[in-house]
Image (cartoon, rainbow, N blue to C red; front, side, top):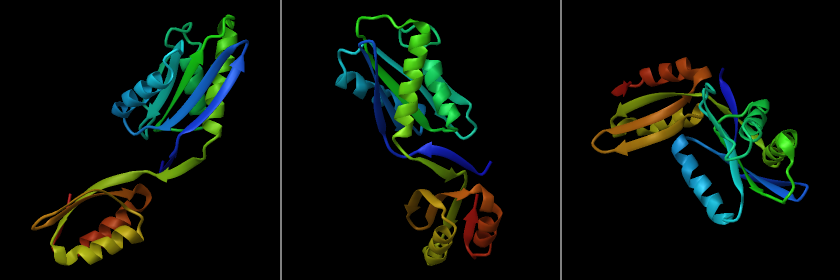
Length: 196
């Protein structure tokens, strides 16, 4: 696997069924720590909502995921949301659906349909983007190498994750996995550059 699909911006869509309103929000999500502020923000915006059901998937291997029915019948909300994320082949994404209860019970099949539809719409209103998988390397070098290092980083679309410029410069960079060997070869040809 050399690429993965995700989203870069927030999306929002709503769905109504027998008086209940379902508002779906999709957000890019880099880590589990970023999730708590999202849910807190939505709870502040919707203090009278009955449920905040969600699902997220994080990581390039797709092993980090979670879903919640938040008081709805088991399996009627979180799993249908997660299935929509998976059916689009996305990762590093969270979908939260805020439900305002309208007085009529929808039953489990009705809830599954409502949460699935809202999640699908919240993911359809924003573009899916394809990103390269990155391999992280650390470079330590003298400032005289700065131009050559910068040229290689730009030329191969590497990402600077962290940089420190003291007596020596230290860069942590993400290199697209499919060209890792080529980029490492280029850096190794430079003098006074330590790679780890």
